[in-house]
Length: 376
Ligand SMILES: Cc1cc2nc3c(=O)[nH]c(=O)nc-3n(C[C@H](O)[C@H](O)[C@H](O)COP(=O)(O)OP(=O)(O)OC[C@H]3O[C@@H](n4cnc5c(N)ncnc54)[C@H](O)[C@@H]3O)c2cc1C
Image (cartoon, rainbow, N blue to C red):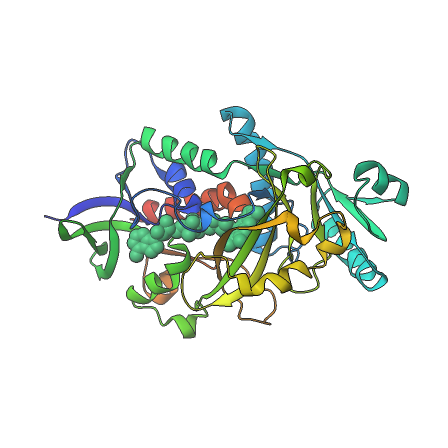
């Protein structure tokens, strides 16, 4: 006998967990299917843990909307549920005149998106960060950092309290459309079995393109092909980490934000991520890229950091819709009724700012789910 669900969610990263916490309720059978032995073992545990403000994204894009809403929701959740966070703010700094021109454009874009930002005078730059060097900078007060594990534990607890069932070591291997929903074929250590469900939500991160494909979608034609982009971090020696107080970012001259200063909530400092595209999932930091890392623009802004202060730390991989060199691509959050897959909701290309956006994405998907179940 297959298990019967009203809603099945594939993937227990921060996005799947946030959605489970949003849609679970006493009168619904909700299953969260996760291939790893526990939640958050992939991208959601391997990132900068920054609560972004929404500066970089085109106005009215899903990324801009979800980031701004997610930023406010995360601070609310953190305060209410004692999730560790620090609203330390972020400085974006230009180290030469070309960067200063781009900084000005970025400042206008951020303001146009509705983000509270402040252009800094040279005196203010020295007051806020005496050890930072730059020709111009602005400050983003709503940017902060969060304990991403604590956030995921909170979403998991809320989902469970509302009756959601979490199945670990359970990999989705097939999806068949059936009358009134989907038959989801899964395998665990005992073999394979099925879950039937009215609503199926794909939050499989790096593998969400593959999950869409096994549901019968032509991924290339739909524009859902994912490109894996690896970001590497280096830890900074503790003697130097006291020399800055805030997140410090360079002016992004390419699509990603570039190597920046990150802190975790305990105050540990690291630099990263240095991004490059990969074909396989391997989280080892590649020593051969050390030179590129040590020449990152952020090093010009922080001349007190020497190469001997840096140690390879960790890497994360994002599920990116944009190919190398390609321009902005937005999150895909789509109810696939137009592809004759009613009740199937895809989340594809949830790269940065996916952690920040997670509670807003959950609300958005919650509305889609309510519409599907209302018409059921
Ligand atoms: C280097 C880096 C830095 C970043 N920094 C930030 C930041 O500072 N702030 C920010 O807001 N965002 C940041 N992001 C983005 C953020 O980390 C992601 O958007 C977010 O973690 C995506 O969460 P997810 O739940 O979609 O994916 P994941 O966390 O990858 O979860 C997907 C889950 O699906 C499971 N799964 C996959 N296939 C199957 C299957 N067939 N069956 C069952 N389960 C399956 C996986 O095992 C995994 O647990 C960063 C990303 C990277 C890589």
